[in-house]
Length: 221
Image 1 (cartoon, rainbow, N blue to C red):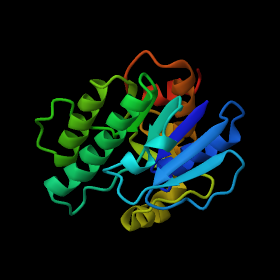
Image 2 (spheres, one colour):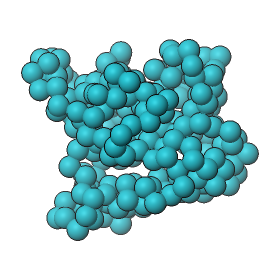
Image 3 (cartoon, rainbow, N blue to C red):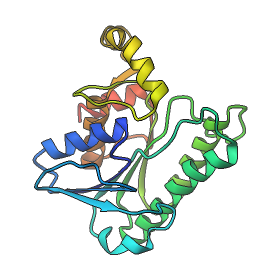
């Protein structure tokens, strides 16, 4: 497979990038972002784009891919709705619409979140906008899947880019392995999510929207 990753410097992105580099059936991994990850691997290609809302300058580098793992995003904490929508919906759709034209039918896996509001009418701002994004992706000529993880345990030295989350993980991190064992339908690791993305890219899945238990089940494919 040839795989694109948007958001490879984030916590989930780091996890799926690691799994892509480790697996033998991925021949090429291209990361797309405002800056390079700094990784070094024979099958890693870094594509730097200053404005991710306009990908026309790098379109020539986005052809011929089998799958895209899209984990680019920001926390909604302290953000105005218009700003959060511009990033969450706007950047995602700019990438997905471009890729659906260049690679029609490709597998596109979008990392959303537990509690996403598919009705787009709920009271929680981030959930409405994530729901709007999911719905728009499902209408495109892509084989799109929505991943809705809840609590994520970072493994392999991976850290969140969000300072508040890093503090939270530092305090609560020792409890996460126990919580993942006790409540497997609430907690996933970055390793789990990376493996599930690769499994869905290879074999698909019976649902287009995958909650935590579905993501865990997908790793068994």
